[in-house]
Length: 410
Ligand code: PLP
Image (cartoon, rainbow, N blue to C red; front, side, top):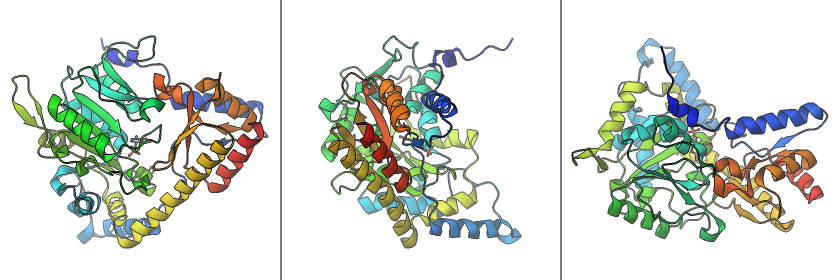
């Protein structure tokens, strides 16, 4: 008799976005004449950069000739041309000494942030910011690292670190013991960024407690402030305590192409039951080689094109389109008297709901009265209650239209 992995049964029914989709569909069915504008799901809307398209076309041509055909990526961790470009442009250029053999190319930061927990013992205590990108929590629930969900809609066994207005949405160091700490800056959903001093405190904490930081930098391309680090490895000593996740999804519009990478430094260790330090870089390599067969050559050529001078300029232009949306959203909502956070170095705006309205109530109000879809903050964790998330990804004309409608009901 086949039995199920009971841990899956602990997951709360329905993921946030299906519920949003359900309410949206129900409203659309009842009001077929209405044009709903989505400021909800964090997917990009601008097309791929011409440099990327050109590189991918060229790669398709190579795949059609015997002499230049590519089968499996031999190492399974990414072609050297891409890992070298990443190392040079994303890290060395910022003074972070990350080598190509510390970079593992993958099909997404979602899968990597979910799968990385396999490297750690089930008795390692996870800490997550609250609110949080739900993947970190759910993947640990599936792995059996938690108890059931509590009445507060948190899972037993996970340390939740509130990211609230009082700490400017950058969590304080946990008081409880935490072995594996997820951090995400620029943050989804709050749009907050961490300063160098704040990241230094986290690195120091991890060193002192022999903890590992899992640093999700999927939105680093949106940082405009030169004082804000793009990588945790810009902090001295971080190579001994941190893994970093990056993605071409939001940087270069690859959500439908799929390419990302994870950095596992050679200096980084966790301990075995006998107390022996074990390097995580070969462990992650071993895991990838066993469970993954690499990202397509065509995709990796497209990703590498984002590091050419033309590619860099083109993707910066696209980021500027979204960040202009973010500015307009922030400014308009603030002028209407709303409290708004984020949206300065991140494509997310964290909007406080009006007094007396919870996240879902405000979501429904915006859907019904302004026909605008947002994401209820409570779906990201208990500390997200009382907020909704708006994304700056969207066609500028739609963003303006959505804001006009919100203005009319405010
Ligand atoms: N990390 C964060 C914080 C995200 O918000 C997202 C996507 O929304 C991802 C990772 C997923 O990135 P990818 O498209 O590379 O899987």
